[in-house]
Amino acid sequence: MIGAVAGRFPVPVRRMAPARTLTVVVALTLAVLALLVIAVGTGDYPISPGDVVRTLLGQGDSATEFVVETLRLPRALTGILAGAALGAAGAIFQSIARNPLGSPDIIGFTAGSAAAAVFEITVIGGGTVAIAAGSTVGGLITALLVYGLAWRRGVSGYRLVLIGIGISAMLEATVNYLLTRGKIEDVQAASVWLTGSLNGRGWEHVWPTLVCLAVLFPLTTVLQRDLRMIEMGDEGAKALGVAVERSRLMNLLVGTLLTAVATAACGPVTFVALAAPQIARRLTAATGPGVMTAALTGAVLMLAGDVLAQRLFPSTPLPVGVLTGALGGLYLMWLLAQEARRNRA
Amino acid sequence: MTRLLGERLTLSYDDRTVAADLDVTIPDGSFTVVVGPNACGKSTMLRALARMIKPRQGQVLLDGQAISSLPSKEVARRLGLLPQSSIAPDAITVADLVARGRYPHQGLLRQWSKDDEAAVSSAMAATRVGDLAERAVDELSGGQRQRVWLAMALAQETPLLLLDEPTTFLDITHQIEVLDLCAELHEDQGRTLVAVLHDLNHACRYGTHLIAMRDGAIVAEGDPQEIVDAELVEAVFGLRCTVIADPETGTPLVVPAARRR
Image 1 (cartoon, rainbow over the protein chains, first blue to last red):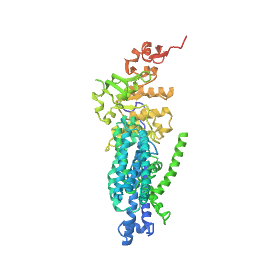
Image 2: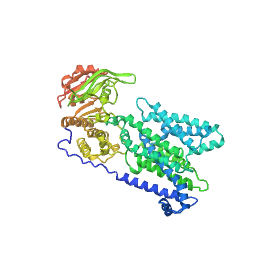
Image 3: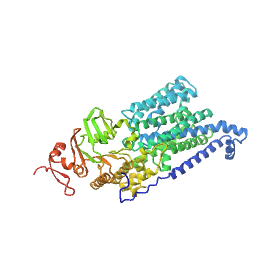
Image 4: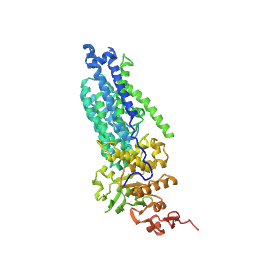
C-alpha cells in the first residue's frame, strides 16, 4: 500500500557513518591520556613520561609509585571523571533548554548545592564528607523544587530556565548572607569550596565517582535517543511516539545526578558544563545532544584546567575553579557575541 | 467501523472551552479537509485526534481502542501528525531529519534497518527532496522545508496522516505544490489524510470530504461538491458570496461578494 510512487526511482539513502564523530572521539580519548601523563608526570617531583607509563603499568620504583598512585593519579582521575560528568550533564541541560546557555545552573542545582555546602561549613561545621553529602542533597532538593514549580501540565524549557534563575538568585542571596555571618576561617573554607578544587583528592573520591558514573553513563546513552527527538519540539516528538514528559523528566534527573556526582567530587567547578557540549558540537558538526563527545571534552577541559592551574604559578597553585571561571567568562562573552551576530543575520 | 473518530469530545485550554460534545468521524481512505473561521476549534480538534491534547470529556478511538490507552509509539506507527511548527535541530541534514520519522519503528535493539532505508528513500522520492538529501535544513526555502517535514511524516509510514495547516506561511506556488503532493499521497498510496486548511477554495478542490466548523461545532460535512454553496459559506464564515464551478476542476469556487456595486 505504501511505497515508492510509481514512475519515480527511490532516492538511495546512506545512513551517514559518523566518521567525523568517530575521529573526534579517538582524538579526545588520546588527549585525555596525554593530559593524564602530563598531570601525573609534572610538579615538584618530575617524572618522565616513560616512567609514568611504566609506573601506571605497575613496574615503577616505590618512590615514584607513591607519588603517582597516592598523590597525583587519584587527583587526575577525579578530574577526568568529574569533567566527564559535567560535560555530559551540560549536554543534557542544553538540549532540554534548547539553548547553548543551558547548564546545571538553569535548574538551580549549583545554587542549591552551594547554599547547602556553605550552610554546612559556616553553621554546622561538618567535615569533607558531610559537605559533599549536604551539597548533593541541597542541589537535588533545589532541582526538584524548580522542576515542581515549572510544572504546568508539562514542563517547557523556557519556564524551567526562568524559574531556575529566580530560585538561584534567592539562594545566592542566602549564600552571601551566610558568608557575612560566618567565622572568618569558615568563610575562607567555604570560599575555596565554592570555587571548586581538586586539591587533595584521593582514591576515596575516585571510587564512588567511578561507580556512580558506571551506572549513569549507560543511562544517558539510552535516554539520549529520546532527547534528540525532543529537540524537534514537544509536538513533533510526541507525534513520533516519544513519551516527551517522561523522557524529559528522566533526562533532567540523570543530568542532575551527574552534576551532583561531580560537585561532590570537586565542588561547583564552573564553565565545564557550559562549554564542553558546545566545543564538542563544533568539533563533530553533528546534531543531537552528543552526550558522549561532550563528556570526553569535559574530561579534557577539567584535566587541562587543573594542570594549568597547578603549574601556571608553581609557587601558588590555584584551585581549578578559578581558571575555569576565568576562561568561562571569556567563553560566555564570545558565545553571546556569536548569538547576537546570528540573530542579526 | 472507521479507523479514527472522536466521541463526544469536550476540548479546552485551561478554563476556556473550545468545543463541547463534539462527534467527529474521519472516513477511511478520504482526504478530509477541515475548514472554519479563526478560533473555531479546527486545529484543536485535529490535535485532539492526534492525542496532542487530552479531551476533558469524551474519547478519541483509533481502530476501536481509546487512543489514550495505547502506547504512544504504537499510535505513531498508525497515525502521523505534521504539527503547525516544528524545530529543525541545528545543522541537521535533510536525510537525517527524514530518517527521524522512523523513530516509532525502531527500538533499543532494533536500530537502523533495510525497512527504514526503503521508507526514507521512498518518502524523499515522493516529496522530491532527494536532491537536497545532504543539505542542511536551515538553508532551505520555506516550500522546500515544508516538503522535508512532509517527507519525515511520510517516512513514518502511517496509514493515517494528519496535517495542521500545512500551507500556512507558503506562497501560492508552494501551497499548490504541497497540496498536489497531498492529493498524490492520497490517491497513489491510499493513505487517509486529514488537513486543516484556511483557503476554502483549496479545501473544495483537494478535499474528498469536507468538515466545516464554527464555534467548536461541526456545521456541515460531506463531499464539498454536494455541500458547499453560498448559504453554507455565509453560515460558517459570515461571508456573503457567490459559488461558481472552478473552471479547472468543476469543484465549488467561492467568490466573495463585492463591497458595493
